[in-house]
Length: 434
Image (cartoon, rainbow, N blue to C red; front, side, top):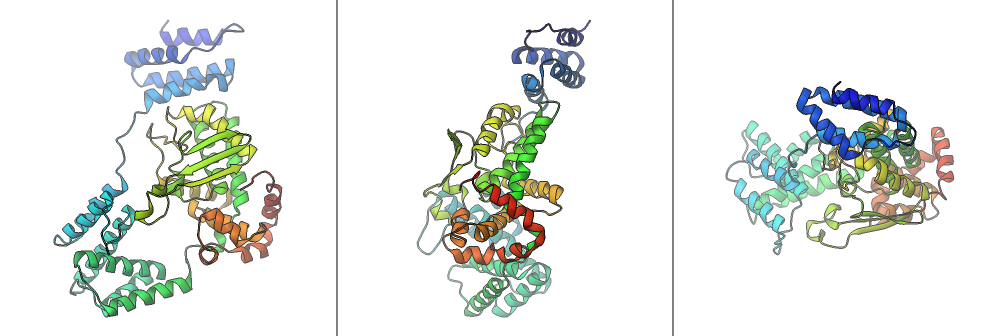
C-alpha cells in the first residue's frame, strides 16, 4: 500500500478524539508523493482534503489547502512599478524628445522639485507620453510639423472628442502642452493656451460622460452583496482557496462601500500595517499619502486616516484575518493575489474585479471608482448633512467637486426601483457609522 492510501485509510478510520494530520506532516507527505508520481500528487492531495473534511469538518481541515497551494503555486516575478512602466513608454516618442522627458521622470522619481517645474506622478508621466505619441502619429500622418499650433491642436482635439469624449480631448490637449514645455523649454503659444482653455471649459460643462445613472446600484446594496459573498465562502464544502477568494471579494465590496477610496488606496491596505482592528467593533485605516490622488510634491504629507464603527464589518475582517487570509499565503495584504503568492492584486485588478462582481449580481458594472458615485449620491440624499457628508466621505475639499462629478441624488430618489435600497440603507444606519 502506498503512502497516499495509508494516509487516506487513516483519515477515514480515525477514532473519535484523533486530530487531523498537522501542517508539517502534510507538507512532508505531499513532497514525498510529488517526488514519486509528479503532479498527480496534487489531485490525490485534494481528495485527501475532501475526505478529511467529512471526518473533521471544513474549518479544522483548512490547512490542507495551505499545503496544496504552497506546493502548486510559486511566487511570480515582481510586477513592474508604475515608474518603470512609464519609462518603458519612452520609446513611443521621437528620439530627440526622449532625453528631456526621461530627465523629467528622473527628477520626479528623486523628488527634486525646481521652481516652475512641478513634479510628475508616474501616472501623469505615462499619460503625457501617451498623449504626445498620439499627437506625433496625427502630425506625421497629415504631414504636419510636430510643434503645436492653435489651429492644428484644436483640429486634433476635435478628432479625439469624436473617437472618445470631450473630457478625453481636454486631457490630451493639456498633456501635449505639458510635454512640449519639457521638450522645448520656453515653449509658449497664446493660441494653444486658448484651445486648452476652451476644451477644458467644454469638458466641465458636459461633465463626466462615463458616469451614468444606470451605474447607480446603491452603495448599501453593494455593501450587502459583500456580506452575501462572505456567507457563500462559509457555506462552501471545502475550506480552500476558492472559499478564501469569495471571502476576499466580499471584504473588497463591503469595505469599498464603507471606505469609498480609489483602487490605488485600497491596494495599499494590509493587516497590522495600514489596517488594524483595535476592538469594540472598530476598523482603523491609515493610508500613506503616496497612495492617494495628490500632487506629486504632496505625497510625503499626512496619511488618510479614518476609523469606522461597525461590529459586523469588524467581525468579518477578524474572521478573514484568522481563517481565510492565511489560505493565500503568509503575507498581510488585505487583497492578496491568487496567481502570485506574496503579492497583492493590482489597483487595476481591484477595479475590474469590482466591476465583474457587480455586473454578475446586478447586471450593472460598477467599478470601485463608480462605487464612489454611489456613496456620494446616498450620502447627499439620505444623511442629514447631505453634500458635506459626501465631501468628507470621498476626501474632497469642496462640495462643488462632489456635486459636479458624483452627485446623482435627484435621479436616485425619483427611481422607483431604488425604494428597497433606500429602506435597506435606513436599516444599516445604526450598523455602519462613518
